[in-house]
Amino acid sequence: MQMSCRNRKHARWLALLAAGLWQPSARAGEGPFFITYTHQMEEPGNLEFATKNLAGQPAGGNLFLGSATEFEYGAKAWWTTELYLDAQGTSGQGTLFTGFRWENRFRLLPREHWINPVLYVEFEDINEADKTLLEVVGHDGVDDLTSPNNEARYGKQREIETKLILSSHYRGWTIAENIIAEKNVAHEPYEFGYAVGISRPLGLFARPARCNLCAENFEAGIEMYGGLGTHNDFGLHDTSHYIAPTLAWSLAGGPALRVSTGFGLTGNSARLLLRFGVSYEIAQAGRALRKLLRGGPS
Amino acid sequence: MRRAFHAGLCALVGVAGMAGSLVQRVPMTAANSSNPLEGSESARRAGAKLYARECAACHGANREGIGKAPRLLQPEVYAAPPGVLFWILRNGSLRRGMPSFAHLPEPQRWQIITFLRRRMPPEPSAGADSGGLGR
Image (cartoon, rainbow over all chains, first blue to last red):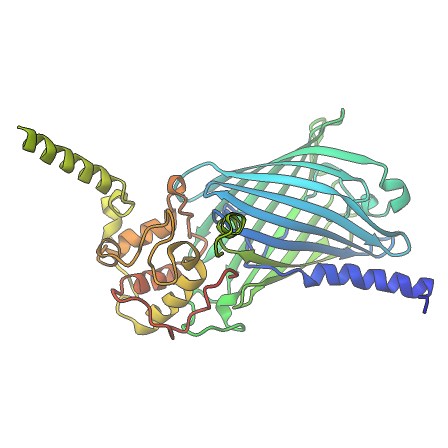
């Protein structure tokens, strides 16, 4: 039996949604945040799978779902490396793969301090149809989300992005600030942005028994992020900014779920963005893989 | 003369080995902190659960140590001042591959330490997570 065009579209949407929700996932590496990074690094040898999904309907544009699938590996206690594969689906315009990102985070100081710096370096090769919005820089705005896929997909964005991540843990609170500088490798100006966040687990003590719904498994927070213009037009003029309450829920069996609603604060911002994601961490994946390759028991 | 040389060499190797121990490299001041949950059975059981989730993949489900991650069921650990263990959990040792666990709230780190200072291996029904590959 042949599917109608409308059914095929629904099936494609369901498949995309399932791909977003079905990924096995883990304890969120960055707490409940989607955009803001803390100085917490992936544990050496651990591999985390995660999805970061973004749904929205900008004024004058179609409903869309952007999805980034993340593979995060703890190469060293001071070095975490990640690969992102980005895709998006826009109502009435189809779905497409929009590119990849390779990011590296380096912890700069060996011990824990009041403020802990981490250097972030990322190379991204994505096209302009990308709708994951993993950072907002320069004069990024709602217009970037309304361009039709069949045009935007031909616009290449090969960029190097650096962040100075500063964060602290104090009495159960996590406070993080990110300063972002991004440069398209083509002749385009440096773009700047920021992200700040604060979060706290709902319970500071762990319960002795295994549990899913206990307060220690929930972490609530709020993050704010936006662009700061370019090096020749620095400032808040014509930039977009968002404030987003976030919630993470770590299940006893390993997966962690995150959800966040972002509210646009300026005319250049999308009015509402819904983010959701799942993550799952495989402890000592490197060791298990090495054993598997050597033919020993894993 | 030859025996004295050997004795000196053994002592040097011993001192070098001790210098390599993370517990012994912790600043002296760290030992002053006391565990507010010391002796609490509930904290020890919660610590066992946290240990299974956060530590067992590297240090082994029974604290036996795996690969470069040292054995934790040894006097140097369970007899160490709680403040020293707290310092290690907070700072880690990036050079040795031990990550910082400062992202865990302080009470949870004390719960882990309450568990680590127990001398016997954890009983199977510690109420802990499975400690399998996934966490």
